[in-house]
Image 1 (cartoon, rainbow, N blue to C red):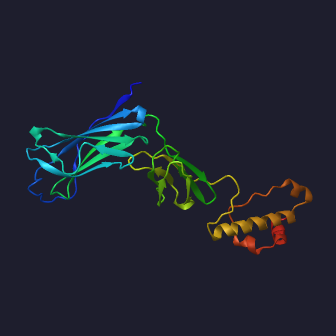
Image 2: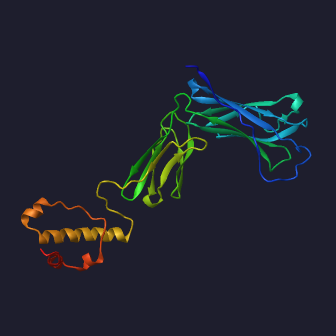
Image 3: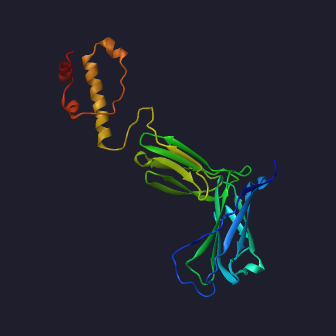
Length: 278
């Protein structure tokens, strides 16, 4: 296998922000930022070569250069704040991002020009796959009676990175993953689960899971209805034993009910026996 693999085509950056009157230094200057990613299998990293080109003949200073994802996942060399973006006829600027592969995703390079605090220009490159054999975070999902237990850890040898637990059921929790440290567990209430994802910015989710009602009997803690359900189950069981013969009691296994009624709580076992005709 070729050690170096081209990973993505360049995308021209677009300006973002509100429309304002630019200062003379950067008026009309709209740089184009393109990038090409190549996989270095040995280091499990993508090498992204960025080209920053001026579309005008007006040189302008760069006031901000910021790669995404941030360090320690990504490092940038070749261009810094204060460098001059030359006129179009004088050439381009070149920068290189080294991005540790934490899965398929995308990387950006943001550039701002001097005297232009509102506009920013962005180049974007897609990372199509995992590069090499990186140390990846590990996420597990365990459905319990009232919640989904999400456990996340970074094995020794990985990067110290931030992560997020997020769900479409309106739950969010940030994590700090330290290599070799004990895994962290977070309880996501069943009512807020939906599809729960573990995410590191700019990459596809590390893992995802959904809460499912466990097969085993559960002692709930969600509120009054579950408490009454347990009472109803116990009273129903006593009524059943009172109405049954020794033979049927020996052959009957109690299965907890997930529903209840007020009449069950107010009616004695003997009354229920008479009502059922036994």
